[in-house]
Length: 372
Image (cartoon, rainbow, N blue to C red; front, side, top):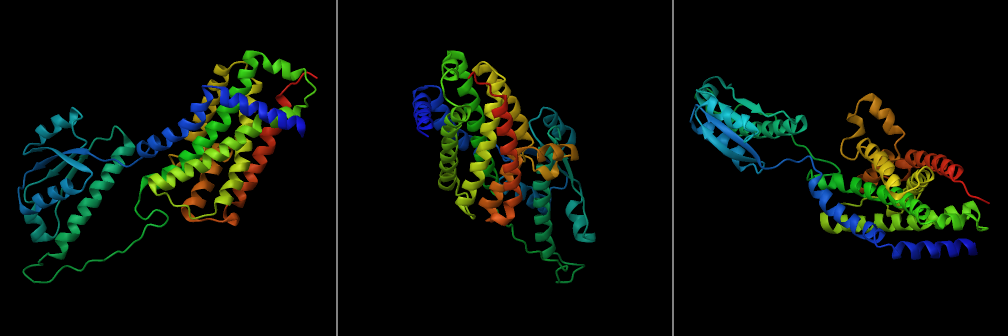
């Protein structure tokens, strides 16, 4: 125990003397949380659109007004020619063309039916789908307002309308930051545990101090505990620091128990620290460790459900995601923070993370060679 205590003291001194590691530990989480929470979003605003209004009626002007006042669309061009609007479309100046045909209002008043055309730039399929949903919502809103005031063949009686009431659970305001911040916290903890552990041991190899430690009477388990435990503490501290920032900056809810998050994070950090240790056993320089860690992290993050839900992925990706610890921890974080889930709801995730921790850490310890 005394040996481990001295090793921990040595590691903390080494960490805080390293000018590169201090910004990585303390400033990287702050910058990433502030930037990514605002930039990593599927919400699209300031969508330039053009209008071809061949009807020029009160109904067409009302519909155009609803698009302009929505807050998501910006009226870029107004013309009476489809060819003219298409020129701006081809130059990528607009993402949407709202084409209103002649007799738009007349057909609506006479038959209760009319047509409009939406031309959407679908180079980015995800963005095109979001633009379509925005536009569809505006049109439905316009249609509802018209139906309420609709006079059916001169009778002062509105057409029957089905009124639908709905509520959005777990994220009532549909704020994308509420969805993203827990995922960003998972990324921060993962990067700290994997990158710092792998690079720290690789640095010992570069400067030659690892050889000095290897020829001492220090046991392998003492060395590994001394190397991993400081970063385990730092990871836990960074996670709760990020959660506090999320609460203060973005009003992210914390409906579940922070102690349950601590339990899951404690096990998860053992997993990522084991990955970092495993990387350090197959590399000799910090550069090599960083490249391998970055390659693994990119795959894990993209297939971890942080940006794209695992449920919407192809079957082969779902199989890979099952063996991805980030996917399990990310799912549990969102369940606890946003839904208020308890231990019984995430117990399966906890068991899976424990199995991963035992397997990966055992493999890393087995791979590490110490000269007795």
